[in-house]
Length: 360
Image 1 (spheres, rainbow, N blue to C red):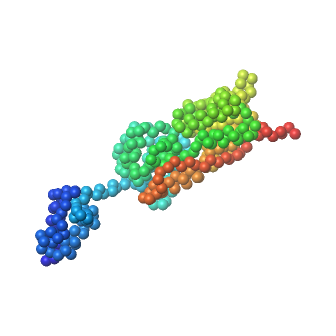
Image 2: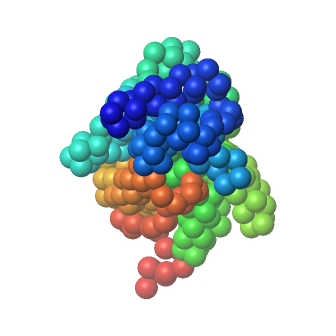
Image 3: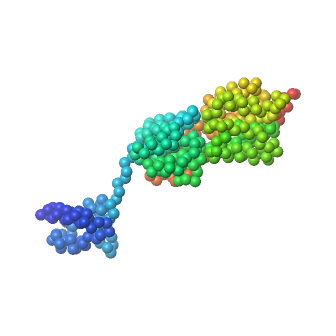
């Protein structure tokens, strides 16, 4: 009899929830006892499952209140979406593939998606589900608002490769290339170089633009002007070898002599391209022209263990991405922020110290 009464009361409560909707109040405990001619224990047992699932709430002074339905958490297609712009950058590919390997080894589910342009990316994103984290790699390309908006719709959090996307509620991981350039400049100046050129990309991305601005500022302060700024119309990692060679040839004056004694490059991510361009111009680095690259100090294909390099360490970069992604997969992880990578200098002998008298 007791169980039958409890079942009948539970059915009545279900019907009342459907009929009255959120915010409505059920009869008091005492009224339910009287209406169903049962004990307080039976009423409490009938109410318990509805309270446990959040359908009902006992509020002081209000009694038993029907709550708004609690939305179920959306299912995630995978833990992490690795979304990347297809490029020629070996560094970019290395990061994505290493992160994929590490996450899978830890039992974290991954979906790897590459895209060639915004339209294709939006088409892909319209057909996939939700993810706990999206690691986005655009390789200096601009980030259109509809594209970013769609990513925030399908991902609980976003981790961005590069520090272009600052001021947004997402993690951004990258190098302050303005700082790296200033360090390379100081190294050359300390070695006695007073005429220094800069060969970067002409792209408008913030990190590149800030490095160019730093060159102009330091050049003006040193009284050399910014006349030896050679901008290539290509993204970092996509410089044609012939363009590099032509640009370096332009550093020679009418008399054939080089107009600068030092050169800083950024965006030549394959050391053999720079090495060949110098060879084609009859230039020996460290003797005829002191060269410093901005890039990854521990990525041998970039500097060939031949060119002095200022920049981040690729191993530290990958470790940082792994740590931040794990933080985002943790419910009580730290808030999103901009993560600046430490800057290092690797010396391989491409800078001639003009302050040392080698004539004896």
